[in-house]
Length: 64
Image 1 (spheres, rainbow, N blue to C red):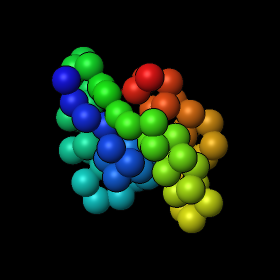
Image 2: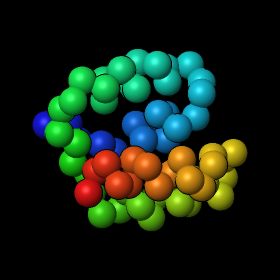
Image 3: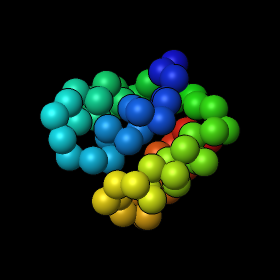
Image 4: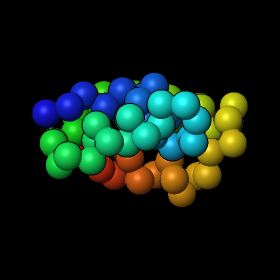
């Protein structure tokens, strides 16, 4: 089980240094869990960074 926090979710959504490492950590099929705050925090990040709205919804579906 992996705790999926907002910083990891954001890193997985934005192509930057370290993105491949984060994506790889979540690609092994482990169960993901997160706080209900993930949705609020990711949408707040959407307002500050160039993240596609549809891309934000994918990790939210996975972590529920």
